Image (tube, rainbow, N blue to C red; front, side, top):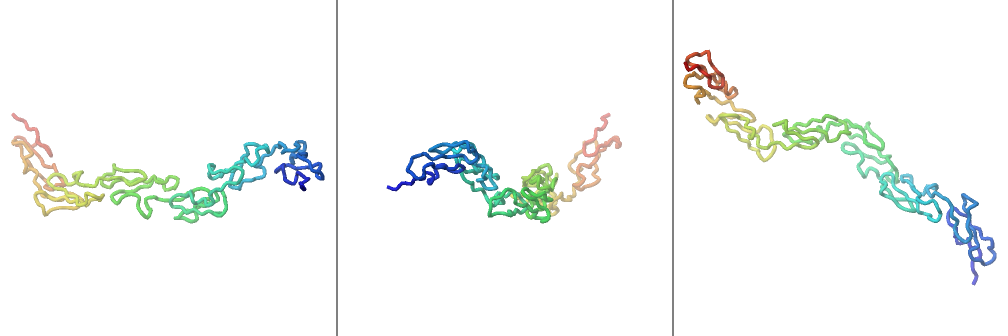
Length: 296
């Protein structure tokens, strides 16, 4: 048979080494020499030389990746690791990794901003731009823009119709710090989401004594749609407030037998303004309750 005489033809040394066969004109076995390109003193006969080489020096990974070589001996060639800068968990050994190309896919800008990746067809790192929807002139590259935004003014209010919305900080850096407080009871509030307000407004007894309260929408949150109706005059009523009912508080005899009762205002708006004065000494009197008269 006609055998190949030059053993270097099969490239037995690999990358970074030069192969030399001293007897290319005769058939010989493993008399070739591998010499390190970066260290001519380091060589081996009939095998790869053990050369020092950081494979990352040749930049085998893409620009959006970090390269690490855990073993810089040729005996461990192609063991370098390419890991994505945007997500180090995405990596590949011995070749370039495939990183996400469109950085906007992860929605880095957040609510109220539009993201644009200038290089969606190539792997790049933080070259996306965030632009404020309500102010296109305000933008940032590779980070959220600092947009002025009152979260309470969004197209869809974050709070319910029965609530007041306040935003203490209109910077996106404090997103969802708006506060929803119930109109019917401002002590009921929640930050970053709608509050749960009492649905039956009559629970707080807004009508008072002598009136009946009715809330027509107890299954939904509503504000001041309850009705107050006078017990002694069902035709007299008011929506969202006390009704103006005629009532002489003295009619129920709130003062003692030794006292005179007078009611200067028979409107519920002045409840408990009746006056009890002692018959024996009218100068001794009390408003809204029975007076203490001298027995002797």
